[in-house]
Picture (tube, rainbow, N blue to C red):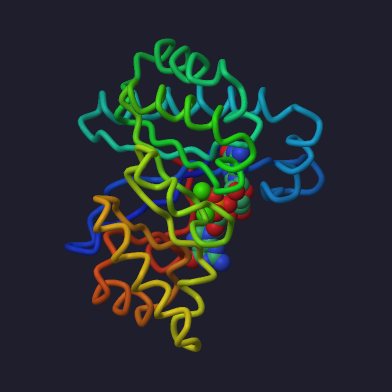
Length: 226
Ligand code: C2E
Ligand code: CA
Ligand code: CA
C-alpha cells in the first residue's frame, strides 16, 4: 500500500506537497514498516520492481488528484540502486505516460548516500530527470557525506533536513546553529528547506522563526491512505 504524508507551508499551513511511503500489509504480521523490508529488497535487487510498482501507483494517484481539480506534487524515495540505473529516467517516464500524469507532479527524493555511491551516474540521472520537468530533493540532509560543493551543481529544489535535527532543537545549541546555517545556505543557493519529523508546536514555532519553508511531521499528520 502507498500512504501519503502531507508537507505544509509555514505561511498559512496549507498542504503543498506529500511524500509517498510504502507499507506492506502482511496476512499474519499486520502492517510491516518499510524499514523491515526495504533493506532486503535493496540487497536482493527486488527494489527495482518495488520502485516500478510505486511509480505506477503514484502516477495513477497524482493524475486522479489533478483530474479532480486538486493537483498535488508527490515525492517518492529513490533507492541507490535506482539512481545507479541509467534506465531509471525512462522507467519514470513510462509510468507517467501509462497514467497520463505530469512530470511536475512528481518529486524525487535522493539520499546523500545515493549521490555519493556513483556521483557521475547520479548526476547524469538527476540532470535527465530535471530536464524532464521533475523536482528533486535531497533527503535526510545532514546525516550523510555529501560534499557541499555538489549542491550548486545539482538541480535540487529542496533540502529535507533530517528529523534528528528537528528533534534536537530544544536540547542542543549545536543543533540550532547547524539548522540555522543549513536554512541560510539553502536560501543563498535558491533551495527550499523542508524540516522532517516535526512533532511539537515548539519545533514548529522555532523552525518558522528560523525561516524554514516547509514542515512535515506527526504534528500535522501521519502518513495516510490517499
Ligand atoms: P524517510 O524517507 O526519511 O521517510 C520519513 C519517515 O519518517 C517515514 O517513516 C515517516 O512515517 C516518518 N515520520 C514522519 N513524520 C514523523 C514524525 O513526526 N516523527 C517521527 N518519529 N517519524 C516521522 P517510514 O514510512 O517508516 O519510512 C522509513 C524509511 O523507509 C523512509 O525514510 C525511506 O527511507 C524508506 N522508504 C519508505 N517508503 C519507501 C519507498 O517507497 N521506496 C524506498 N526506496 N524507500 C522507502
Ligand atoms: Ca524521504
Ligand atoms: Ca527523510
